[in-house]
Image (cartoon, rainbow, N blue to C red):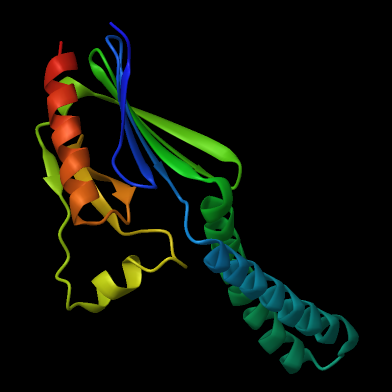
Length: 187
């Protein structure tokens, strides 16, 4: 049997073959949004360079301490927005179901981190619903952040989350495909 592929949306592709089922969710967004993230990153870098220069050139101990604390926060948010930019440029999430196993992979910053889970130890998939009128919903579903996972499951005392920033239709399709594939490949 040949593999079947279904394009759910611009970002979500479902692939079914006799050996495995796979969901690919890309970080793809409009080109202008990627450019806006790049501009944000460059502006953040420029501001940090100015502060680093002041840190190096200034001798006042208290002032240097304030600048150091600022630079710690600056570096953290530079790393965060850099990860978002890289994910939006070429990142993805891949969910692969094979006999007895689910593998979740997320590519950000050029690295792929696969995590394997035994299907038998996954009691049920859960839809992650956040009230639409909440701050968390508004924040997690913005294109300039990583987050907003829509699907998850309990596994060895942890809650595993994946499928970032899907809309209603994509979430329904992904959960239906996962449930069907997991029951097919459960050993």
